Image (cartoon, rainbow, N blue to C red; front, side, top):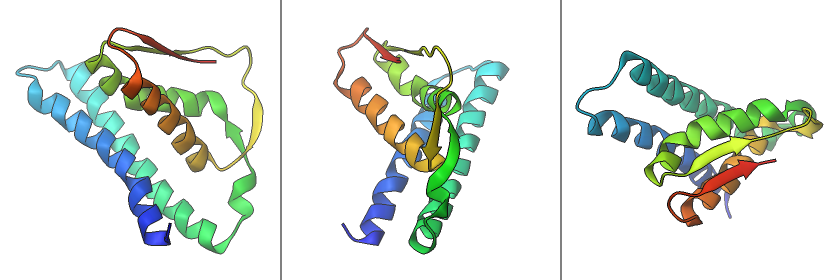
Length: 136
């Protein structure tokens, strides 16, 4: 896949998250301040992740050193769950995770987020309504 197709593909998921959050806001006749603020935070964080993704794509094409950062896996999993919560709720699917300890891992946080996001999103997509997705 050429670089422009790869960039387009990688940006589709964050845009889908933003669209899903906006759809939730548009579909509700009344929304609590707390729900509104929560939705806006997800949109804001997703926009920041898109920016990070673009930065990472640019850096990856120039420098491989960002592939060895220490990753906070638990934080990445929490972000993935929060970003996919709206989509999961539409299918009445519960998202959860459990960890005995936060493992030490090295890599690229944006790429790890994308990998976990894609795995969980696919699990939601193909799971029957009312199921559970657990990350361990």
